[in-house]
Image 1 (cartoon, rainbow, N blue to C red):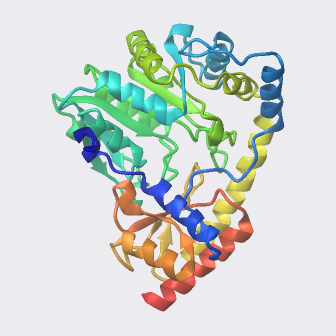
Image 2 (tube, one colour):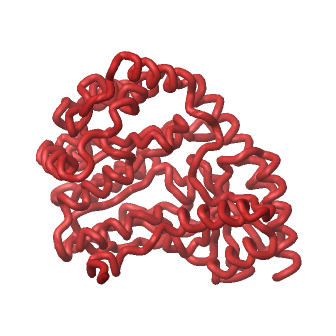
Image 3 (cartoon, rainbow, N blue to C red):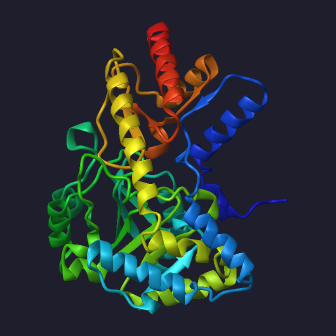
Length: 390
């Protein structure tokens, strides 16, 4: 049977593929340490679990409105007001099956053939694939260690063409952990003034911030940025709810929400009803104490991991301001990150993701969302691998 041509341009997720391979090798009895998945090793907070149990017991097991139940949307509105001083209405919010689903819906309803989407690199592996699947053209702006893996307003200005429709920002970033400051976002906003370019701001890791830094959302820096920004977020990372599949977006562009609701209604309908009720206490701050415990542990792991990596000859690593990844520089050793990571998995049983998957060669992504003992063992094996092969 011939597969539809549209699938030819869609690449499989490298992160998912490496994670699956690691699990397969482990199931075969091999000693595998995996640092490839972006999934917290913590359990979902009890307050969320109890809300889910209550939802089941209360009979909230039927279809809901496609765009989400009112109570959960109100909790999202409250969260955005409390955290960032932003005001949204119910018809400016839509709940989807994870932030990945929110983004897919956005691109499908907005992007037409030839439309350009500016994407800073390194980027999350899904961004360019979804743009291409929507017949759009990803336009990459390169960054590296010297710029803190962040693009400047000047770089964005230079990348804009008459076909530019969207600027996609990810802060804190997957895979680098880079965070855009209020000043940087304000400068970007100034460049966009007078254009019709929308900003898609993926803020999935906003609660995982280190060194006392304060997170700033793109939508809060000016009224102009508020009007053009689509904020995408969810509970997978900070609240350890990866399997629950809860994502949402907020935008004053009501026509976008309406179009997405129409599309979602024909594809998935509503998000799992139990998940929507379970999300309410997390959105309203009742899980904040647990989130802080996780954040502190991530920060501890980050500090130790960065120190250990920077002690390995030929390797360097910036200390990220957020998220739970290190984007490790191996340019002194090789620019072939795929071979480096493949050999590392085969010879030492350590799974990490090549920088090539994120659009930037000479690096690999290391997730420290796992226990410290495994992290120390993994980095020790990486050091052995480097000493023996480079």
